[in-house]
Each structure stands twice: as C-alpha cells, then as structure tokens.
Image (tube, rainbow, N blue to C red; front, side):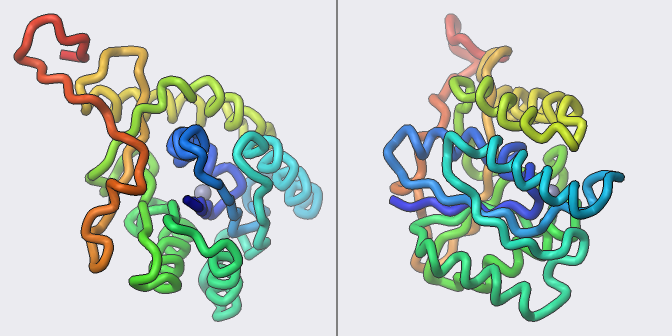
Length: 229
Ligand SMILES: [Zn+2]
C-alpha cells in the first residue's frame, strides 16, 4: 500500500499528519512525502538562507518516514498560477499512491485551502483523499481518529527539527489538539489522537480497508473503563 502525504509548508506534515503516517509505516505501508511550498515567508531571515534551512529541517523532521520531495512553489501564493497545478499533479502521478493525505479545504491558511482543492481536483475519482485536522480543529468534523500515543514522542521530536519556526509553540499546539482528539474518543489523559475527515464518494464509499485501525470503543457508562470520563 502506498500513502502520499502532501503538506503546504515544510513543517505541516509533522504537525498535522505525522502520527497517522507512523501507524501506516508500522503496518508496512510505503510512505512518500511532498512539501508544496518553499516556506520562504516563515521567518524574518534572508529569504534564500531560510528556504535552504527549512528544507534541511523538513528532511530531518521526516527522515524516519521518507525523503521528502520539495516542489518549491511560492509560499503564500500557492495555486495562483496554472503551473502550480501541473507541478502538484505530476508529483502525485510519480508516486501513484493508494491514498493521499493532505489539508482540509476549510483550513485557516490560503495555501492549505488551495492545495487541498488542487489535490482533490487532480485525482478526481481515481485516488481517495483523507483530510487532516485544521489549525485548532476549526471547521473540522472528524470521521476517523487514530491513536498516536506510541508515536507522540517521535512526533514532537520531528516538530522540534523545525528550529527556524519557534517549534515550542507547535509542540504546545499538538499536545492540546491531539489530547483533545483522544478525549473525544474517551481515551484517558496522557493518550493522543490525530483526527481526519474522509468525504465518501464513488467508488470510495468506505476506505476503512486501507486505514490503520481506529480507537477502541470505551463506553463511559460502564464501570472500570479506563477512559477520560
Ligand atoms: Zn502550513
């Protein structure tokens, strides 16, 4: 099984998709990663140096999953030109994945939104697209949760590779979001989950067959269930 993760900026895969990809890797799936923009707006340093730094940071952050492909599209204006669409489409065709993971089209950042729409349009009904959580979960109603507790330490380490981005704030963010998503499944404190959304469409009316197993069910009205409530 081939999984392709496409992030808009050099640290997005680590922040939003890392735990899921670790679970897929553990199942023997082949992971490919694509970073769409050059990340040149993510700092105040000299532009070229920042791009080079961020590339190295992403390579380090993702090294246990795959060697990322960098499309070097312009940060902040992804999707403004037709060539962006072709570049993204070509990168997908090269991998020919069984499943794509990318941003949700109602996320906060225009690059995330545009990338999401471009990816979906590029694959049409040929490849299922799984959308990752949005920033702070806004506009996002998950349909699939995955327990990433065993990979949380690795996820935090991978985010910390992005030194140019003051990664401590994103570590705080994922601790908050991923523990909230776990609590939504009535998992106890100290457990972490990533949440995803899949929009059913023919012939992908159900993709559970591809996905790693979701959370175990913990009914809260039964005694002795080790849950949040
Ligand atoms: Zn981003």
